[in-house]
Image (cartoon, rainbow, N blue to C red; front, side, top):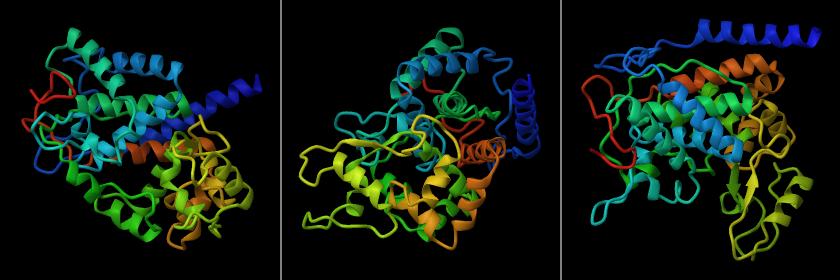
Length: 334
């Protein structure tokens, strides 16, 4: 009974924190995003997305991590306009999703397309792919971490997707903390919000090639990144041999790989951050304090903080009103 009451109180505290601190989102020069945007025009939209995501994640938990990452990669290139979902057309310029930072790593495209087809049967030409992606990232957070934050909607879909803009906007897995702070600041996100959003690395997987420089020198001899725990480094080398011939994947968080939680920050403090961009957060004076606060934070408090940061990220350079379009297919412009 005490456990039930504690869980109920935790849930009430989480909702209260979200209600108090989720920012009102405005896009400059255009109508703002709104909570309950589809209440009248397509009241079942969010439920359809939620059921589609839940079914996909039940078969493969990694899809949830993929959908959160897909939303992040969308928002950091041209804003949250669904441009990452567009396919390259024969004879045309390459799209974002074909960039090495996205292909073959990004997952979840089929989930978004499936949700879009189901919504189109009920509410044609009404719900944008950009909003579906934002809903899917929120639902993945709820399934994998019980983080359920309200999402303002009203995004419109862009009709441009540029391969070259990925390199210019997405942070590399080898950036320093100062470079990460600058990268996120260009998108209107603070250093604290950057460290909080990095908590999404408590789920998902990364290819060995994205951190192999922490394990081996250029000539293939064994290296030891001084910030990397020795036992953890040894376990990574067992999965990522220098001459393996393939590029296997490793769980981003060795402690709770399928759970979106703040245990990630404790792992950083123990030298078990997988990517350079993970471990640098615990090593740099500019971000170490945020890591310590998040590591000590009560789970519900960190969950609310993560939700607020996701809502703010989801407002980056959005198209609203008469801007952009509502795509009939998420992978093609109308």
